[in-house]
Amino acid sequence: MKQGILAMMLLFAASGVMAQDVPDETVMTIQEMLAAMQCEMDPGDIEPTEGGFELDDVFCTDGQYDIELDADLAVVEKRKE
Image (cartoon, rainbow, N blue to C red; front, top):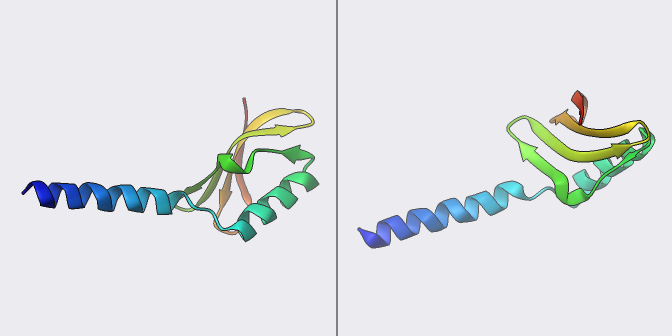
């Protein structure tokens, strides 16, 4: 039984790490989009979500934001912090 629990824990840990991976091409596209919006952010703050991506601590010329993108990288929500 302990082996089964350990195996499940390892499976969840591995899937959590893989779920956080964002392809380099997607990161570059997001960074280019932000630059066009006069914004920038740490690429490590790009988090995949069920239907797209959440961008935390985006710094723009008019302030700091959290931005949600859909799967096509279109802005769904932009919240000022």
